[in-house]
Length: 164
Image (cartoon, rainbow, N blue to C red; front, top):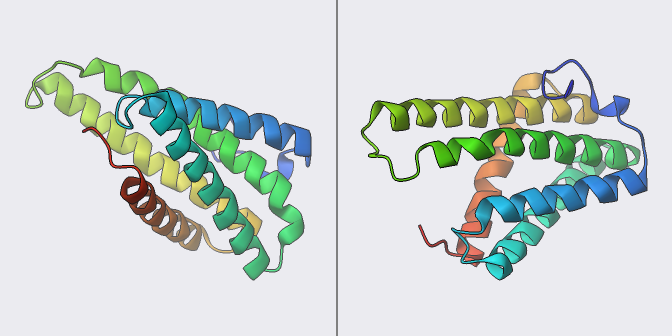
């Protein structure tokens, strides 16, 4: 939680392969739960989630190797996947608040603003984690987070067209 409030750092997370595996499994499970509808059921959601998880881990590994900090991978991956999982869980109820509502309704617009705020905060939290793991500025961390998000979204949507 403190990572999501920018009060902790990736180096505060224990360097445990077991913890990383557990957090990765929970990240995948939450991702599947969030995308069951758009990706056509469990199979599609699981495949898209597995690609998403792999992309996060490969991106992180590449950035840490490029910045000559590969030893930080376990802690940083655990911190990043944990923070992303928590923020995703916090955002899950927002989608159900507008199901069946007219998109022009005040409620739908308020929820859309909350979703946008959560998306922005997710980029800031990811940037914060990258900032300390890669020893870059917060601005560069957020820039890397945004670039990753755009590329990963494009890859996943090209591999797994949605039912939206």
